[in-house]
Amino acid sequence: MHINSDVRGMWRYADLFSAADLDASRSITLGEGDTPVHEAPRTAANIGCHRILIKDESQNPSGSFKDRSGAYTVLKMREQGAKGIVLQSTGNAAASFAIYAARAGLPCHVVVPDDVLPMNVHQIIRSGAMLTQLSDWTQADATCAQIAKATGFHVVSAANTPHRMYAKQSLGFEIVEQCDGDMPDAIFCPTGGGIAVLALRQALGRLCGDRGMPRLYISQYAGCCPIVDAFNAGVDHVSPCPTADTPRGGMRTPFPRRGADVLQAISSGGAFSVSPAAAALQAGNCGKQDGINVGLECGTALASAAIALIVGDLPRTSTIMVVNTAGISKMDPRYL
Ligand SMILES: Cc1ncc(COP(=O)(O)O)c(C=O)c1O
Image 1 (cartoon, rainbow, N blue to C red):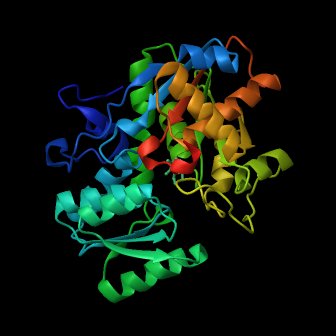
Image 2 (image 1 turned 120 degrees about the vertical axis):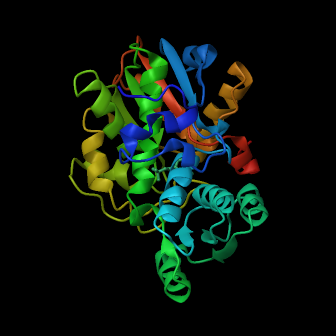
Image 3 (image 1 turned 90 degrees about the horizontal axis):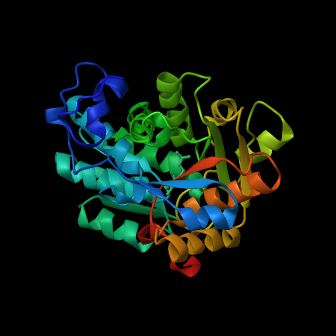
């Protein structure tokens, strides 16, 4: 693969995820990417498989994997001469984009639910972004559209720009480089809208080909799992979930617009939904037993991996990677 080994972090893969003319030296960076892969031997023994690897995206500057998309999308917006940006997010993307917008000197307005986690509010306010909190989350897109109309800002919510997914591919490229020919058998990705797992599929497909590709699995909360429901029903489209009962934080996406693509991406893997309590138990055990403080979203991935092993979907000899999309600083303390 073509990587620029003179460059640190996700920008070393810029030729792979971006237009060839991107000059990495002009990037808006705070050190995103280059996150560690940890062995979690006691968690593996606990869950009952050969190896668990944790790709620790909580080590990104704002504490979540959203920084890959944030850094690149803000750069593209600045290049395109945007007056400012507006996005809706359950919190982690809002905090990340606010930070990178501040770094780029670009005005930013974020729309978040009214129960957004305090750490995200702190990061948003500290970055000088404008903040709108909504009690009715179904109004998020409409609110962004109104703000965009009034201000002339560019909407960069997940469904509104391809840049977010392009940059997220760096997660997959990095995994391939770090595994150095010894790829895991399966990767479990905590999923809401599915941009992360789609980017992973795309990146791994490009570098590993279909035959060398790990099986991809998604995990969702039982209170909002439209993709898992569609997967289990064996249909090729995803119907909106009428209610969204999830802990505060990521993965509250009742209508994943790219749901059909996600179903294709996981066709050789699978999808599981778990309760917040099951996720909290696995996340807590991982912290106590292996010293890796994963977030609740990653707890859903660990709990789902445990189910896949129990039901025989994966053999006990498997090496499983889970993506820790955000750490405990981005977690509802009630689940600690
Ligand atoms: C911590 C965390 N994990 C997972 C997700 C789900 O990501 P995606 O919407 O790309 O599936 C999100 C997004 O809200 C998140 O913030």
